[in-house]
Length: 335
Image (cartoon, rainbow, N blue to C red; front, side, top):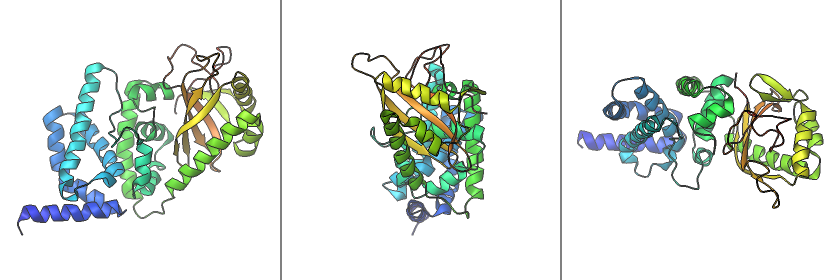
């Protein structure tokens, strides 16, 4: 057997192992092909810090998408394709001066979180994410796992920080994530899919309670008594404010429909469509993302809201859906 065939057989063996959840297999694959991946990045970007950024992004993408590899003997070409796509996206973004999401997905109907759910390594990845600081965790989670808040510009607006800070934190987050993945190799990993399912149920029950007029009771029962809606580093209001804002929207005929959930032990994101009444179709922006920090008991402790398709103004649309400028509640800074 020649050396090339032996390498392909070894690639196939490691790829199958990674797809079956063997933690060290993907790391070995990345090491085997790192030189080729780096060569692709250098050929497209030239020497510089962008190469490191793209290589980090490619590592995260490979972790999430290894289950999609159809020809395990050609996994090296697949890894180089991920790097090539990331480079091209970075170059396009730089040309337009407006960063956009560059995480590829396999189809128009499959979200990044759905692919994560299909990945046998998902529990290990989420355990590592939980080891990141809150300042790094939220931008990284939004970038790779949210459905609508994925571009650097959107994340900056959602978190209340400059785009350059977002890029820096995501880069740091990827580096720290790689370290955390190594550190948590032998740790017990919680079941990520169970958290997502539980959070989907929680979101559905929360929205249903709001429509019944029971939002206040649900918050009292399930959320932290110290829950705060935040804008930047400032608290906009607590439970009473949240209930008043939600009740106002419900009375106006506004409803929300859950479309996507991201759930960790310390951070949850609910992304919803906003359904306006027929006689007032522009009452609220078309969508909202609930960005929730959880306390040690898993209860919502801090809430930040972001309308990903809304035009950002001096006093963005407030509350759990929208509202009036006299009672603003836009998204907040991550600290």
